[in-house]
Image 1 (cartoon, chains in turn orange, blue):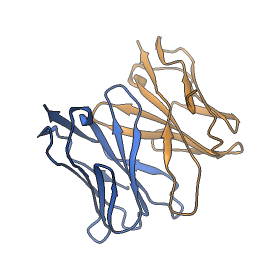
Image 2 (tube, one colour):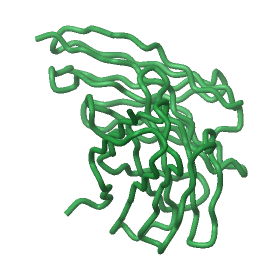
Image 3 (tube, helix red, strand yellow):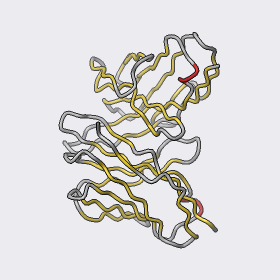
Image 4 (cartoon, helix red, strand yellow):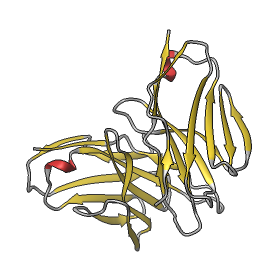
Length: 115
Length: 112
């Protein structure tokens, strides 16, 4: 079984709809992240969480919200989807080992299309 | 604003040649450096990490780090068509940042 899973893998929705993307991990990592990837813009951080009680905004958090339901689960919500949120969304996890290592492991991604 | 710069490519090399991928970063206090490989439509996959100046080798891959020049590179020896992908450079500053900053990636094409 994959260490980091994302559901759904593909989603087509309409403008104004509320959408939730879910991420689960079995790696036992405390840190979880949500990124979006757009052609030519690379990976951009939306939100990150270092534990269940810790949620932080990333570079592009406007229009998104998150929930850390448990150590293993981190959900991303689009309260009212708009077409420019069409992108590939990745969840990632990491476990801090020492002070200079923070390798992130990525889920398979969710392709979201907002019409 | 922390920046990580990569040539977008495409970089084309013949099969069996050495592919050289380069990355520069703006934050002088950056501590950890990563190379990820990403096939089209797939998730990034970690290839190498490097934390100290110098070279680090793993099979056909060698990462090189020069903190004074704020430069990190990835060499792929004996390039194979299966190496054709986009390579992402990522930099972790630590020191309160706690975020990984990614470059936009270099697309590598290995020609059989």
